[in-house]
Image (cartoon, rainbow, N blue to C red; front, side):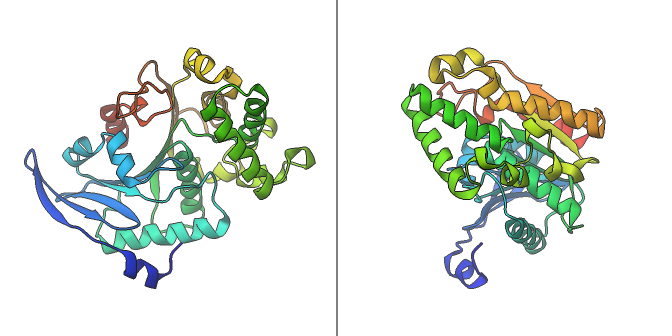
Length: 298
């Protein structure tokens, strides 16, 4: 987290009024976030980007703004990226950051939802759990994740497998980075998986959901597109290598622990496309914006 002095030095605020189909909005851009705020507020949607992405990318890939404005939801897209997990101190700092943003921009605290794509989904789950546990002023009603790598131990093992297969350049590059990073942060899991369990939203091998224990009363959605054909052709991955596999297992686990009423697993088909038209099941586009808004407002 930047200090207040650095934030004040770097922050660039651009506010502009625009009329979007007769819905008056304010747009604020800073070094920390981008905010779209309707004149009349019914709620707040907080979004976290994928690992190399930012708020600008989120708005480019996820066409949520128009329907949010129509329903009176402000959209706060965070620039916080490059996080597959959060240290305890980072959770505390992020919670304080969100409280500050909401206070300074006079945002609604009545109906807050948090969501993220890929690693941003991990952040969404972990910060939501912390906000509830710490009794923060920011209390989410629900959280959703979009094809997120929620099991860090499984992510490490899949990276090992992908390195051995040596199949595609994107897969090799990602696997090389993951193995090196986790070896440094958590150690080789052959020597113990305690650190993986400590920071991972979910560990299938031990059925560990310690970092989600405070989400029992929240609405939770898991979005994924388990297009095995695409993954086999492009990465030679099996179903057990996909984020979809672990999201389904976590969904089943939480339904058992929390009850099925508030837990939803949404598996799509042929919805994954990047904004540039590239076919990829690992994309924001697997989320149906109208259905998501209905879930948030009902």
